[in-house]
Length: 313
Image (cartoon, rainbow, N blue to C red; front, side, top):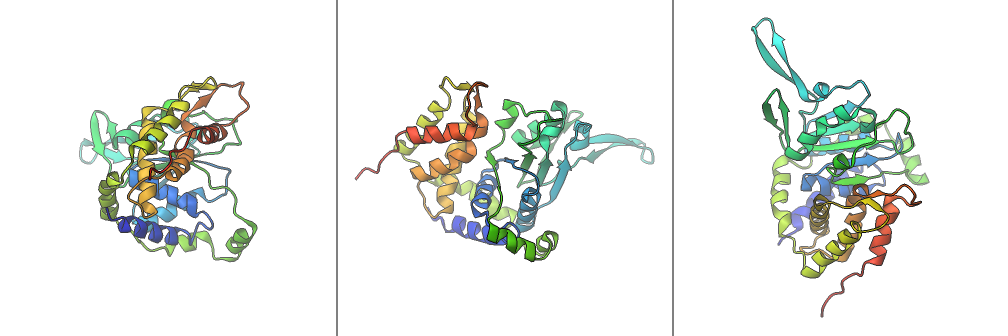
């Protein structure tokens, strides 16, 4: 398998988005993986770290439509999906699409909306379609939802249920920049100006082609067993209320394949699995309340405990 198309796409997208998002190449690579896999992202970070700019940069880079939705307690499901309204001039009902009819969706502060409004995302995230009054509308590819939530504030929020968290392919964090990087950002032109100047470097047909190629990346029996050992530890543990689902194991498998291809290999190695496990698995587990341990540390402990397969000579 020739992986040059993957490495070339990674280089172009990373270089382009890095003009706006400085020092976050690792996060940009994970977004690329999610984009190729056709998954969705939960971006959990404090305000003002560039979450919106990250998705805007990707939208410009792939030439896709972008919609930002501010989630609030008074938001209704029809505000997202659209409604059928009566056109008095024509004397008939017409469908007015909501903001979910786009390519890249930023669901800002998703946990501030009520569960009823949050659930409006379930069908489109899983089935790539929206149903209104018995009629289903297919979404155009690429289609990705990036939802954000502030991990520090809980007042006036509605925590996402486990079933909805499981629909997110990855959970990522941008974090703060280094001192030197932030000085560079302070001195450069306004971010909006930089985003407007970004060229399109990838098209939808190229993404579609890569989606059909990455399943050819080889995963040996030992590596597949290593993945399942990690998943099993993340399912059967006294510290857990809920463990990793089968959707989670499939996400880890696909993310590892794409990560290998982006790094120029047609086979998966344990390092691919370890890296992707920290993005794909932590948000899929629920720990008992008495445990003084966060989800990231729980998965990291599992990765330290599970034996890594060695290459057979």
